[in-house]
Length: 133
Image 1 (cartoon, one colour):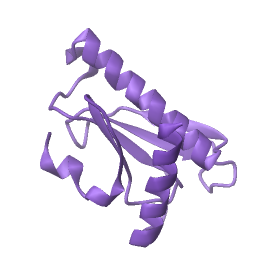
Image 2 (spheres, helix red, strand yellow; image 1 turned 120 degrees about the horizontal axis):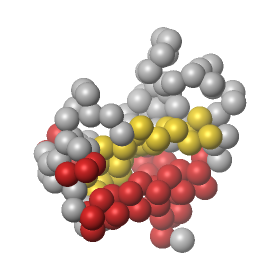
Image 3 (tube, helix red, strand yellow; image 1 turned 90 degrees about the vertical axis):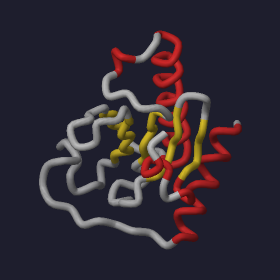
Image 4 (cartoon, helix red, strand yellow; image 1 turned 180 degrees about the horizontal axis):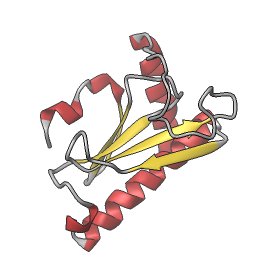
């Protein structure tokens, strides 16, 4: 797996045979996370049936943990690849109280929200707890 996709280590909360789940350093949308394929592929259709199924199941499992941890009003799922040509899901919990509710996260302006290392570690532990259950 591309080294940059595993960094920073303290944001990783999930790992399977197929993928890695980690928090986005920008937590403007609380819980915003990525599920990234462990090996390099650019398109979903390029995966074997077994790996595609595993990648989709991992994404769903992480989404469930995010929903249980953050209780969003909606979960947005995006699999783009225009900016980084490596398969990775964007899982974005959305809340009716967020200033961009009803619009894609890519529109409008928003301020980056960085947390303390301790706050990231707390979120990682909460997500890992949900993934164990």
